[in-house]
Every structure is written in C-alpha cells, then in structure tokens.
Amino acid sequence: RLYTSLQNNIPQWDGNTDSIEKYVSKTEGMAFADDKIRDSLGTLVTRTHDLGEAQKLQAEAMDFARGKNIDLQTATEIIGKVYDGNTSILARYGVQVDKGATATEALSQIQKTCAGQAQTYANSAAGSADRMQTAMGDAFETVGHAVLDIVSGPLQKIADWFTSPEVQDGIQTIADAVGVGLTNAFTFLGDAV
Image (cartoon, rainbow, N blue to C red):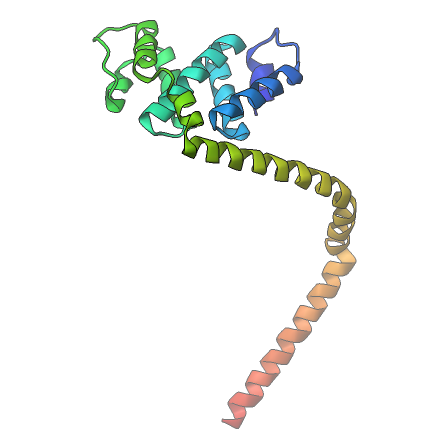
C-alpha cells in the first residue's frame, strides 16, 4: 500500500524502494512494527503529496502516539487532520491550541507537548521488548517467505488438483453416498424404535 501511495501521490517519485526500506528499518528503532510504519507513512503521503513532509509528520505522529498512549495509525490520522487544518481535534487529546490556530501552530504545539516521547519509549524496558518482538517477527517473516517460495509450487498443484472438475465430482459422489447411507441408517433406526 505504501508504494501505491507513493506512485499515486508523488509523480516525481523515482521508485527507489531501497531508500524507503532503509527509512522503515531505521524507524523500527522507535519500537513500531514495520507494517505500522508503512501504513502510517502511506497515509501521510496521501495527505501531503511529499515524502519528506510525510516523514516529518510521521515523526510527530510517533511522538504523539507514545505521548498520548494511542496506536500509531490513530496518531497519524490525527496529525493528518491537523495538517489539513482541523486543529480543534487536539482538545480531545489534551493538546490546547488557541482558537483559530493555524495547522503550523497546532503542529508546533503537538511538538512542544510530545517531543521525544517516541525515543523515550524506545529506550525504556517496554520499548526494548517491543523492538525485540518486532525484530523476531521480522526474522520469522523472512524465514516464512523463504519457505513459502519453496512450497508454493507444490501447494498450487495440490490446490489445482482439489479444484479440478474430476476431483470435485468424486467428492460430490462420496458426499452423496455418505448422505444416502446416513439417511438409510437413521430410517432403519427410526423404524426399529
């Protein structure tokens, strides 16, 4: 989804996925899972149409998420709304901004309120545990993809075989025979009782 957002919203994007993956990998150090980082960044790219601006806003979303104890996607949506000018939403999260504050002023207030929260959390015991869990999940994901690549061919052949008309007809024949057998058995038991 992130790469689709980049292609659809940043016409000058050069398609360099390596730089995006390096960014995501580095950002995982803030104790957020890579899929959450990608979803957040994709949301912000769609709003800003600028990768650099989206990354800057994502850093604020990460601080806001940790500072307000909410998930990254919720924080991202809030930051996106503030970026679009909906500054009144912040009152629900305890961030006071002057009536009529601009998006820039509201984002600055968020920064003042929550600056450094993501890094503080990442350096805590809970953050370290989250980072370790994310790293282990990434490792299992890598192994899973490797195994999936190996077994996908045989699994596809088995799926094709099971869905073939001949096998489906055979399964139906067996199911019909079992149905008739059970019907006869229950009829016999009913007559016997």
